Length: 142
Image (cartoon, rainbow, N blue to C red; front, side):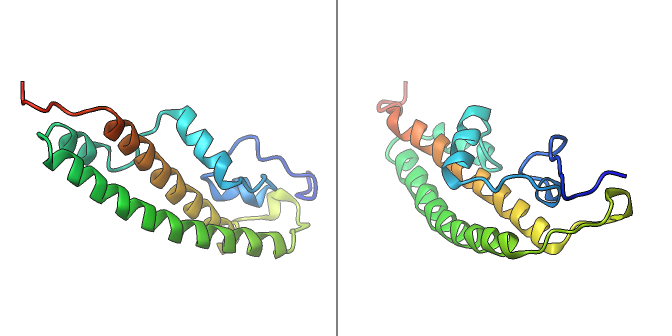
């Protein structure tokens, strides 16, 4: 029987609780940002942001900046909780049961995977909004 003391998380990504349960590396926020950038993911607000992008100036920029400010606040909060989860996971004892005997991962594995996914969405929104803000909107409505 395979023991968890020599884990493999090859079948799961960092957004899944079993990734951490099987010993996957806790990603640094910069790594999550780069992975998000490389994936091209736009976040769950992609449709709302796209609709705002179609608006005329100055409403477009104002609304994009408001979403950006709210996302930055949320990102700061999510980063603080992610760091707490990472510390808690680091202190969490590793299980030595055979994988076949394990029926579920622990709450900390679920918590850190959810916070990872929140960070992915926060970063995706900021990347998308920054790209749109750097691209000038249609000033004359043509």
